[in-house]
Image (cartoon, rainbow, N blue to C red):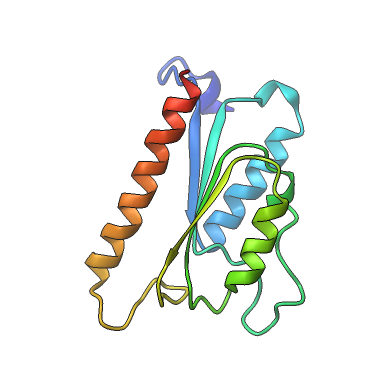
Amino acid sequence: EYVKLSDDYKLSGVFLAGRSMGSRAAASVIRQLSQGDDDEGFIQGLVCLSYPLHRPKLQSKLRDEDLLLIRCPVLFVSGSADEMCEKQLLESVVSKMKGPKKIHWIDKANHGMAVKGRTADDVVEEINTQVFSWLRENVQLQHK
């Protein structure tokens, strides 16, 4: 509310993002704010890095309740070997989401985005490329 109403910032909208539990918290904030129609459009999108869809080895209890109610664009960047976000489960949840969505899989990355044979900088560069490309696409969509 402060950022939205502040004369210091004069923002027409924001993107929320987080990694792991931070992405889950950001999704929860968006869901809560979207229950009031007056916030429609201020939150322009969500970036989820390593979204913790389930506990390790406990795929039966998904943490998808907020995701299924979000209507703004969402980008997921997840590791294909993430022990807290099984690939098929995330793809299934994403297929049920109402708004525009995209998943970028970091090949062989775990929940911490570590990949054997790749430097952390190399992986971060791939993540950044995807995130900034997606942000550019979605900012342009907002202004058309």
